[in-house]
Length: 310
Image (tube, rainbow, N blue to C red; front, side, top):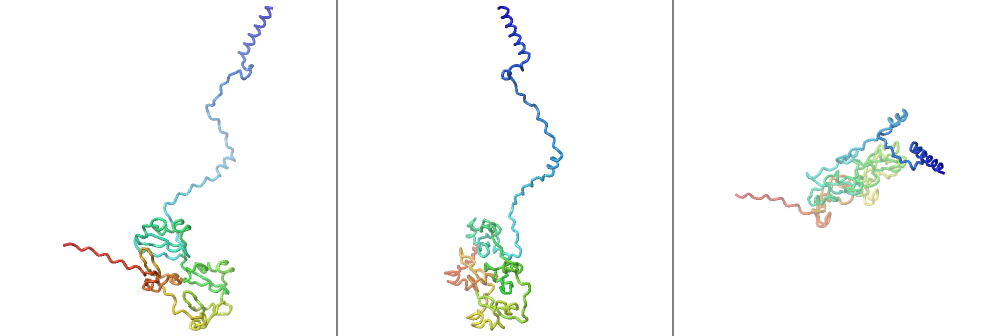
């Protein structure tokens, strides 16, 4: 019995000694472990030749454009020259909404002090999109071309029609472009008469006849007469005959309603032929019940210099 107990004790001691000598024989949970922290970055894999070539060929993104610090207004081709400012430091307000959106110079302090939304420091600022107009000012062409004959497919220049607002083109080439004035564009050639004839020029604001060499033959789509007198006879081109004279150029129009009621001179043939708000002279424009119910404002009295005391 004693011998068995001794053997058992010796076996336990032998097993303990073996475990101490070989810890891997015990279960993993019984063996304490400490994580190993790397002290250096692992080496990067080398890039292949094809990948390096592809990276070199890839274009770099373009740099963002630098902001422009000042407004640059491009001059439109074939545009009407803008009038000069009437004073040294004007402000600018809305001149017209139709057919061309434009700004004009003002010098009255009462107008210029209105500030943003009604008066701007320069024409460029006034014409900037979002200022006076959502899409900015529009450009009136220097010359205006209209249809002369639908039947012959011809265009002619008539600067009196620049403010007509429709059927007006800035050049003959534009008017003759297929799909604009005519589906197939202007005719390649139009026969001209050796002697001029007379046809209707305008019905409004004046009844006028003009000479032509392209509208004399049959098929031109226009009735013609042999002379101006024949065209202007009552019952011919017009039931009342021609007007005594065409609208004069220059003419006078309303300059401002406030703070002063004024009339201004205009040398614009399109303005003088628009048929409304146009007067032959400043005296007519400023007369009571014409441009204004009370007439133009009285001119400001000249400043009186103070006398020097002796």
